[in-house]
Image (cartoon, protein in one colour):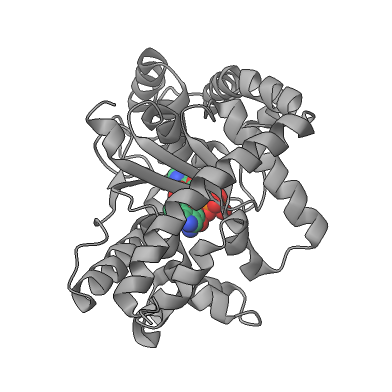
Length: 336
Ligand code: ADP
Ligand code: TRP
């Protein structure tokens, strides 16, 4: 075993829709990179998705789709443990314990909670409030050192560190390592923008470009991207919608292509239509092979079921070990 295989990585994605470019470049690309070097646990966060009350059929379809997409992106079940969160009930037990030391004030102050409560004032449920506690349980139950996630998860990850630290202090043990964010290139955590003018690309934002998407639909979406009437001064600063277009291009296109359109922008001769056409083709060149693999794997239910079953076994083994240590520290191990 290499030195690095001794360090542990955990991350998950909710099965709330097909994976989009934000999920890929914010998270999955790092999963693929890390799997050969670290002890990796990648899961499908079906319990987390229950906060928005999916129908049973939608939930199952979503879990299967994300599993197929993980595999199509190149996560290898021989190298990484791939599992479905609800197959590992130990996580829910740890969540209960952590909840006893998670305080209403700090949970209410979490940005994503406030945001979701504002968006859906009729569904401010306790699961939503304690969402970061369940996420902390996911991470620390495998004693993770690194968590590859996008920028939007930065605060949730900070809370995971807080809960881990609190448990360690409370029971006078360094049981849990403090999980750090992992970024693909060792720099900033990434935020892939949407093409609707502002904000991030997201499943619930309704602005996703999906790995599974038909090329014709990708072209349509990219051609509809918000732009403006064009620069009027040489080298002028780019407004947000234009910056977003360039950000996406930096992600999928070659540096030469980006430099070309950047030059055109700075010279005030850019034709956004040309830029969008190029961007659409570069996105398709990237997604098309993944889409082919998704189509093939999705239909192989026997294979998908085997991956999920074997992953669950490995994840439960690791989780049960930590849970036994936690219970002993808390005083739940019977000594009589
Ligand atoms: P979504 O935000 O689309 O609902 P999830 O919340 O399940 O998807 O996110 C799964 C992973 O993808 C997380 O690591 C998250 O940080 C990452 N992610 C989602 N959207 C983006 C984005 N626009 N840019 C970067 N990373 C993202
Ligand atoms: N909260 C994450 C998201 O919405 C998904 C998630 C759940 C997760 N548990 C996790 C990510 C543990 C990393 C580690 O994207």
